[in-house]
Length: 148
Image (cartoon, rainbow, N blue to C red; front, side):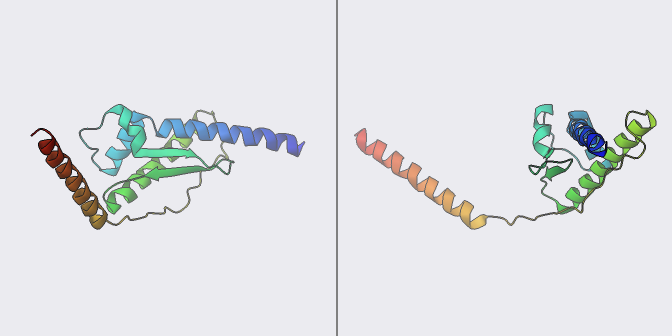
C-alpha cells in the first residue's frame, strides 16, 4: 500500500510544481514580485519579455525540484527579487492550504541562493569591435576601388 500511495504522491508533487511554475512566471506575478522587491523593470519590456527575466523550470534530474534562473545588473536587486519570489510562492501555498486545495502538511523548501557575478568582458568586446571595424573598412575600400 505504501508504494501505491507514494506513486500518487510523486505525481501530485510534480503537478503542484507545474502549478507553482506557471503561477510565478505569469506576467502579473512577475510584476508583483518586482514591485514587492522594490526593483523597477526596464520600461521597454513587454509582457512577452517577462519569461526572459525569470526562468523557472523542473530539474533535469526529475522529482519535485525546480531550478530558478534570474539575471540582473545589480547583485542587490537579485537578492531582493529572490526573497520576493520566495514570499510569493509561500503566499500561494498558504492560500491553497486555506482553500483546501492542497494538504495542510504541504511545505515548500528553498535552498540557499547561488549568486554568480560575471565580470565585464572589455578586452573581448574591444577586439571584436576592432575586427568588425577593420572588415567594414576593407569592404568600403574595395568597393571604392571596384567602382573606379
